[in-house]
Image 1: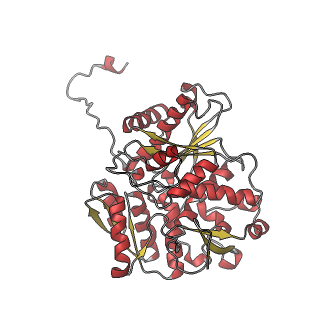
Image 2: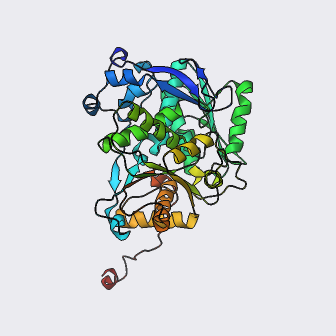
Image 3: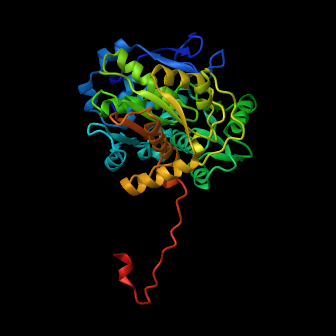
Length: 413
């Protein structure tokens, strides 16, 4: 990584996403005075003058390659764990099975290749790096699993203490991963919003800093690198449609922000993609608000789905998700858990790509949208697989052979 003077930074201020009120950069912030997420703003003309596409193409280092469009001022505060550019994987057999036009593609962006095996590495790397820059020494957050693992790993690498709360039914692999990577983790008899309440109420009593989704300004900056990276990988032309598994929605909001910044810099050509928020029928507050024409989504009661990462009954950035979906001409869609399971099995067996449940939900949603005409067979789509499928339970295999008995080889033909 080059020395700090080689990387000029361009943050100008922060801005309330609801009221537009500006806040000074280089200070610790949570939510705005209006209780809404703060967005980081940049001198984009300055970025354009300092960085060109050819120079960017020669860099390595995963999402840290986009330093001019990120908030970390000093390179010494960058907390890195070997980030990579996550691959785009075509699903040609799926495209053929679905009868797509020759020029149309179904592409999975596999975020499971990042440190700790999920796209949460992007947001938490930035949040932890900024915590280091500000000298914070104790971070806390609620998690359904992957975010907690990412924060534990990056914070431990930075020497920062972490306390993490997760729903009591969080898979054991996630809880163990969080604890093993240096956090103190507690199971809570409730959902992620109940865990979030504990974090919020403990700020004054304990003195930790709340790193909940969108309650600090920098996780969104990390997640927006999904959009920066996708645009670069596709030659600065974007797909027709993006399907994104949506719980707190930081990534969807972040990508839409990235596309706006790139367009303002003149780096994007062609139309922007339609953004599709994918949820489960057992927890679909954004879908309900979208279909009702509302800007905010009320608490979803008795949330349930096998895709734990999108089991978020209420999102502080609900209006930002809905704005991105509507501004892009996209939509919000909910899928049954049975369709998610079937999608995971189909893509694994037909393509050799093991999707996590949340990623499989995007494929199920795509199939559903193809069937009802919201997406055409001539359109290229990108599906976000947000974590490695290796972290999740898989079907048991009981088939066996007794090597001491005669083997009937006819069974293999």
